[in-house]
Image (tube, rainbow, N blue to C red):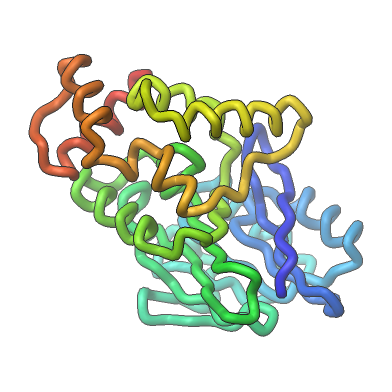
Length: 260
Ligand SMILES: [Zn+2]
């Protein structure tokens, strides 16, 4: 059993605080800022014992130096020269123990070249858990800063193949903006209309929309629906379609979102 709580940072980042009942130990995922993490640890009475990193952007690693000055703990992350604080480099075949639960690494290049996601389907968990940084968002996906459409599409397909009940912990509260775009791409998707109302109700109460699930993303995230005739038709109506291969649909969709 793990408890996973959001620590809000900057405008719309979520740093995830992982703890376990009956233990004082905690991990954090992508600490872009140290101060909110230190406060959250103090409030929860937890001691930081490890840090998981998904990619090198400053809003995901900016708190590392301060946290490590407070306390030397292992930092697990991808082999990126731009994250000098990583003590334990991990790759696709790696798995590490997080408070008694085994997590494995999925390499998901596209947003950045060395982007990884952390996944556990440990049977002791209520459901599988995914920390996917800025690759898959609720109802959307990250921008392609360092990758190509085929590469990012393949990465998203890897996440889409995870069990439907996987809880998806992404790193930003971008959901409502993503859902507005999703409605433009899939105007007749009923699941999407229901989800829009549900997520808006959470935001109206100041609640996070995260975690999502892989099942919800498969139904309502246009970036996981590159075979959906509605998505293809919307791109054609926008004169953005350059080919019908799923990665081409994905690339056109990503460019449309960039301009949206
Ligand atoms: Zn990023």
